Length: 324
Ligand SMILES: Cc1ncc(C[n+]2csc(CCOP(=O)(O)OP(=O)(O)O)c2C)c(N)n1
Image (cartoon, rainbow, N blue to C red):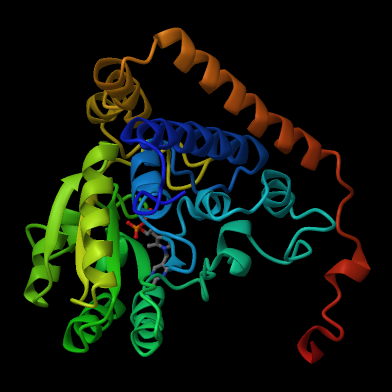
């Protein structure tokens, strides 16, 4: 759903944000269960829901960060069953088991793929898409996600420079989870904040609490409206924390346990539950019921995908693929 076009009340939007985050958490938990190589976005749900779910509308072109990309597919209408088939690389999945699920796009929902295994190229690609959109008669915008580590690539600077120089309708959302595999941003980025780099490219740039859905939604919403008015690009840095290892079976001995515990206490879903109770008079028991129901739907979809047959040799054959 879209924050801008929603006919619902602010309470509905707040509840929808909760539902998106709960579903996102369970998608990621199931993916971790199904694949030891999963790059989980557990604890980063407010960035995903706020940046891609509640601020964009149909027709906006999304270039999500690879971590959490499947959640973005779901937000754009991909069925859970199809999503888990791809995670498991089973017969009938969109890539027929040829490559890792988060690299797929979901073109039916205007979600672009991670076009190479390289961090960075999606940033100038996003600016390129925004250039095309700026020449159309629509008010569609591009939203580009990136990690803090990705900000260290040349593509980051080229993509931001191009967006600003050509006044393009693009919003850059940095998921600053404070790790690039085992490296902290302050060890490798010669800047105090990633947003201040973006500010150097003459675009409005803010840093927000990435575990607070309200802050992410407000900042990205404002940036999207600006882009729709064709007033140029913006940059939103969302400060959050990578609560798992780089991938599911990385136990991350390099992390500080006190810091991890501090961020676990700042769980975005639990904070949002408090918001719904205090601001919107929702009852804890209603929220628990909603959460359990949504978790069950996701678990069921994953379990169904697990019963699907494996891709066979014919599925994996590349014969004729390039003729299509
Ligand atoms: C250009 C490039 N350099 C290095 C890598 C290897 N690599 C894959 S994921 C990753 C960490 C990315 O960190 P960040 O952008 O902060 O995203 P996060 O994984 O924290 O979500 C690295 C270094 C790569 N794929 N591409």
